[in-house]
Image (cartoon, rainbow, N blue to C red; front, side):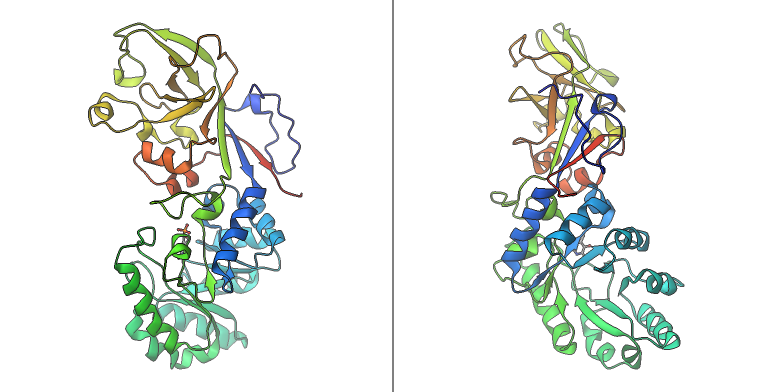
Length: 391
Ligand SMILES: *Cc1c(COP(=O)(O)O)cnc(C)c1O
């Protein structure tokens, strides 16, 4: 268990020894690949892309896209142009789409990096079309239709008119897409409404490949896989079917060493603002992880949370789930380890914050958030170890 002298055997891992960091984050690239294959097989014959925005949901965009490309993934989605440039450096031959599309004047940067914008308004279509006309090249782009989210995208009613417009002759509409509002709720009638609305778009763009599914969409009974699916969360181990068992393998493991064991007497409080009071004598373990590491402060064990009967954060210590005690501070948090036999746990031992059967979905629930936020907040100052990859 005590593994602070970890050999940093992978060149992508952080250079400093694990014992010099607060938490230790282990990213299992073999599990990432297994998850991509499971989704690919489930969506076949549709192509399975990978959404790697937000630094591959916090896991590291370069190692993630390299591992996925090696496994056979050919198409990647990022949110920002800068993320596309980073992905391009890691996978020179892949197709890369940028979800947030074309900001004014950015077309040359797309061309230079070989990236495809996802065009979500008529202005963007006109700008990309004009750029391609001047460049004398029909460069590829995707077109986004909004079927219910009301964030980005053209309205489905506009599909016919746009498909016939002159600007479309100037570039290659390589993909038409839309995005689910609530695909993790399979019984929500909005799924069927979106599938139907997108059907009209596909009729208008009969020659362009079509894409609708995020992770949870792939598991809908309607199987709206179309030509290409775009999973993100499930690749990284999140449960795409929250009502049932998680078919994905965990990819992320977060551990931290105990830096001090102490005892709080009955009635003493723990942490900032004295939000937790010991009922009887409690044994506490302090670990060097806090909200500055991206661990959610909302996982704090406070009186308010206890009164509302909502679970606060927890860690696994010697095989037992132990609850937090008091507020998560910037760089530290306390765990109530009274239930772990005295002598079974010592200074320097590692506790598990994510991993074993403490999933990112459970960590999120205990912090009143979603696993997506837990992943994308994973801190920069953890010692990072990549395992399970070939290079
Ligand atoms: C983030 C995103 C995805 C991936 O969604 P997951 O739920 O993480 O699988 C797919 N498509 C679009 C448009 C997105 O913004």
